Image (tube, rainbow, N blue to C red):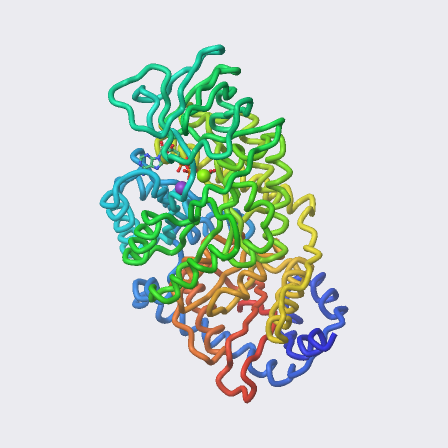
Amino acid sequence: MAAARTASSALTFHTSILAKSQRGRLNKKIFGLPVPVNGVSRNVKQVKKGAIRHGVVRAVAEVSVKESESLDLLGMDVVAEGELREKGFLGMRKTKLVCTIGPACCSSEELERLAMGGMNVARLNMCHGSREWHRNVIRLIKKLNEQKGYCVSVMIDTEGSQIFVVDHGAPSSLKAEEGSIWLFTAKKFEGSLPFTVQANYEGFSEGIVVGDELVIDGGMACFEVIEKIGNDLRCKCTDSGLFLPRAKLSFWREGVLVERNYGLPTLSAKDWADVDFGISEGVDLIAMSFVNDADSVKHLKDYLSSNSDKSIRVLAKIESLDSLQKLEEIAEASDGIMVARGDLGVEIPLEQIPTVQEEITRICRQLNKPVIVASQLLESMVEYPTPTRAEVADVSEAVRQYADALMLSGESAIGLYGQKALSVLRMVSSRMELWSREENRQTNLRTHQLGESLQECIAEEICNSAAEMANNLGVDAIFVYTKHGEMASLLSRNRPHSPIFAFTSDTTTQMALNLQWGVSPVLVDLSDDMEDNISKTIELMQTKAMIKAGDFVLVVSDLTPARASSSAFQSIQVRTVV
Ligand SMILES: Nc1ncnc2c1ncn2[C@@H]1O[C@H](COP(=O)(O)OP(=O)(O)OP(=O)(O)O)[C@@H](O)[C@H]1O
Ligand SMILES: CC(=O)C(=O)O
Ligand SMILES: [K+]
Ligand SMILES: [Mg+2]
């Protein structure tokens, strides 16, 4: 309670401009709000009409000479900017899009087409491709960002320790017929030995007994273990199917996954080398495969904070039964989560994936961690130019659940129709977002309180209230001024109707916020004079014709103002651009 009282007293409302709003219906509403108006008179003076008008006049006078300079002053994704100009505030897409980069899309031109198509994050899967190849892609993306004004964050995804097929004697896929007998071994075999499959790890059969079921890729094919010879397994195919390259192996006993601790670390020596590579190439995010507990996430985060100058965010991939059981502690330790449905579907029955996904996205939102829904969203588009209706329904469902981001895997990495797949994600997301808004499904999250310190509680309360106010008032946009992205993230957590423009002077914050629902990160040189920041950013946005007179903006800030005697000061203001 004490926290809430203090938070309220820190609220400031700039209502004088609002009274002049043409939106009569709004005036009644806001004046009906039981808002404390501490400090209003001082603030009203700060935003008196002349002050803002002065800013506008100056912007207009300088528009011709400052056009190119303002590009530098306001670092916003050109694609989001174009979307805003074309479709207006509410037309801006909220759900973020991640594309896995592979041989089908790794040239500068192809990467640029994906960036133009709305890719917010490029994912590099360290399971595939050489380090040189990855380095080249990262540099191309950074060059596009710097030279053409895109804002694409780079995420590497570690290989992790998992048991998979390294060789099955055929160059690509291979069929297993029902009743055929196969030898599974960790030994390398020369040439093609029919019906022999090599696993990548010698302990792959530890704890496995005759009668257990060996499942390929979560059900592509099934075998029964009929004999154990040393570490090798002789198996009979009970359900015919396909071995794809790098097919995953799992074992089941009486319908339950045989959980085995192979003693393999979450990050192998190769993964640590990839992490060092990521640090040296300045990647923005690291997705950690096969996380089994919070400690491994903490370990990587500690390593990054001692070894990287920039703050690289760590996303934990939920793709094992273990990680599912420890979801909350893993989410709390990480900077975000990926629902890695591909491998998760190897470890849990497929029919559980939809409910598990919904639960993970719900928990992530409660804990304020961005969540990516990944794998097979538009799988058929690896080969075909249109998605199946079921795939469209799956994508819509992830958007309806308010996942922060959707991810393409093979669709963009090796598919024939990567850009088309991206445009399907874009259109399906926009449609579902609109529907959710119109149907008013966007009910405010009944949040459990996250903050422990008073300061954190204040920030949280301010953001919850700001999002609710923004919806009630129907503001065009929410502006937030943030150092580490915390306030922007807390606003996003409430999934408000209006887009959130997060102004920050920290590039790492900008790149991390790229993953968050509804947030358009904007790089701008912020001072510690909040009033100056607000008028400067409004002016810059006006110069670039991103906002115009009459637009109605809710401003949230937690930066320390110049003359405040206390250490921090948070506020919600409502402004009409004049
Ligand atoms: N850098 C790359 N080079 C070559 N092929 C790639 C590359 N990245 C992805 N691919 C191909 O695209 C397919 C799908 O990509 P994705 O990253 O989802 O693979 P995955 O191996 O299933 O993922 P994970 O191992 O993380 O569970 C891969 O099976 C692989 O064939
Ligand atoms: C993305 C990933 O790693 C998976 O779905 O398994
Ligand atoms: K991976
Ligand atoms: Mg995986």
